[in-house]
Image (cartoon, rainbow, N blue to C red; front, side, top):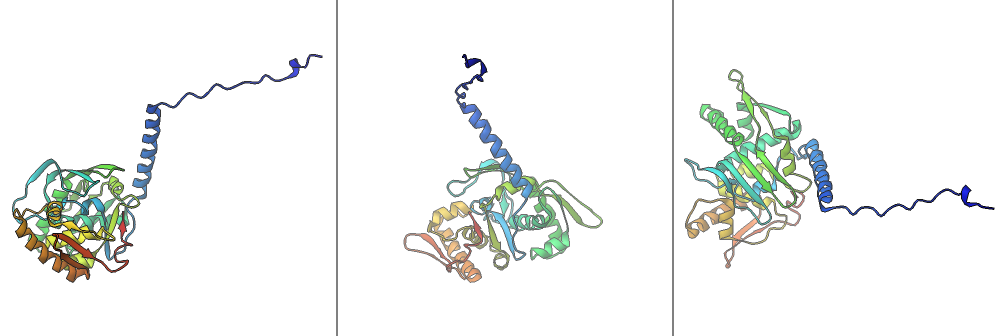
Length: 291
């Protein structure tokens, strides 16, 4: 009896076509886009009221540099000094530690309201929150500083992700109520990620007001759970100091390190090899550093 007619035909599938490099690249791009969408949707991470959450890239570079008073240069697509593995290209007026005071307070407000949403504040309340006077000249200073931030565009690459865009989006100011209405760029969330930011102790930073080098050092070393030695020349380059003579900068640095130590309790010194040494108590800042 012929049984072959009652049997189902067996199909042998062809070998799958090898995935091309172009397809692999497309899949990676799609995965990256999903991750970026998720990060933007999540918004900024949470930090305590007494802290300020800042992306490490802003603290490990000369983005908010140590700049003397007076006229500031306008930089056109200039690569800024930064630690190894981090690339920052900047377009806009050179920014200072005073700009960082304003930017971090905008981010602090946005932390509660969410990036991509509108943040509102009066000049009076904002200036009080960052420890400034509230007179006419201070209100004009705030206006100019916000304009600087809105006109500044950065490109940041850390080897894993890249961001480019303004530090804050557009805004309006009600001339009657003096209220500012500003949109924070939602893609700023990409600069944070899971491990790309640090909680800055606000009281410590405030204690260093009008001491830009000490403030820069505070932000820079806050990103290090266990700081290691940096040459004095390297610190001068990273902070964007305009002091030309290294021995003059070294004297400024010693003074700033003394102020930093007084504010934080960290041990700060320059050793015989011209290395800056910063020591923290065990566990100090380790829980505040994300990457």
